Length: 546
Image (cartoon, rainbow, N blue to C red; front, side):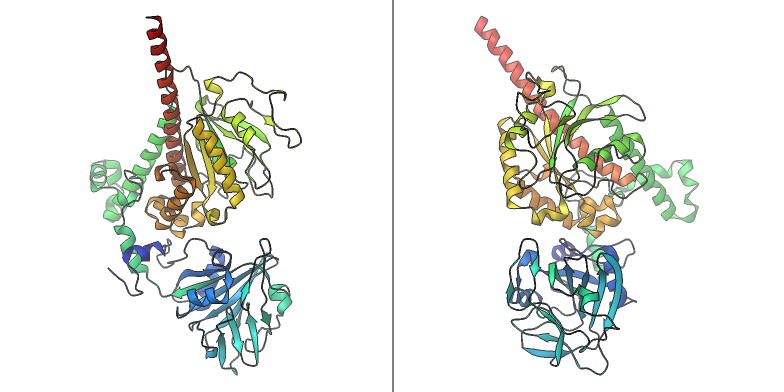
């Protein structure tokens, strides 16, 4: 079935997401626009109807060339061009006309330039086109997005092709602010810091509100993970009817079926969370091996959310937001000490039967090396070991465990990957991960991926974490990571860590515990293999004696 914009049902859903407001059908994966920026642009473009932004062109992804820009953006209708410079300023322009390569000017009275942020500070300002001028944009086959007329281009973003210098795009465009747009006293310096050194340039199409289409289509989609019935909207009617027999619930139903359904969904989520917590609280490693605790090693890039995942799990069982592990953003890893964190059941409660092991973050030229990862996997590294780049880890280092047993080894490895940066993971880091996977496969250690920050790639999930398994954007990211890592999709586990929250959230708890439960299952798979090997050796010894 094709819709008005020529997309199939699946394509339409894959390119859109729906906010709680019921009006904001928004941005595809890979965007740099914040929610605050989008809200401001919505108000400037049409205060009465929110639009759908679809990313057409991203210079860091598609290459910064005029040919590519026109191939991806010509004849797409209204668009927004956004530039992000090296000083933390964000600016650009909007046109209601289509881009083209006709080397001609186009009249557009609705066009405007804008500034969203200057030097890292939010300073939104709209610069409308001067009433006395005609041309709004210029379509030239060898130019990037260009605003202004034949008496001077207010903003020509670039000419020809621009190559990156490190992480910077040194655009070769020009500015002549005030020629066709009313800059209200602002200048090149106060808008773009007087230069065109940018981190990225994006062009979004601006489409009409497709709320009804998307809401209907979204509800028709089955979860891409089978047997997950967490999303309350996917629950069958039997739960509602069974709850209706509960007198307590019926006291809330005087407002009609909506109240009954609301109470039913709350009841289901509370019960589901309770069952998940109990399954993890009562978890024990496979009997017959003499293990007290399963050990899970978390490995990931700096800032991917390793330590934050521990803090999230710890918060759930503590009953409040916890920051026990050092977490945050920094140029280099905040974790310098190997920690085998325990999770306690409640305040000062007993330790649960697993440990989350946190180590240095992966970097291109720093972090864990091949020898260190082998020592970690084999159980040679003690808790609270302080990594020292000047002194490589070796058997001669103080504290080195020289005779580790099965209980000292790592039983499952969780690679922690930031979903919002999947497309820009460097080749060096990927190579290091692949080398580590080789070491893990040699030891038959199961591997999973904790796909963090999923709320940043899909606004549907930002507004409703429980929609994670019906989000086409998250599914697309899971598929991509599974292919890159060489792992089955069932080993890629989306998760949302606690970052800016000050209170626990039921849906965050549920998703985190779903991931942890699956990781524990994979840990048991490793232990089953060890048990099989022990039993096989016993049988072989018995046969030799006979």
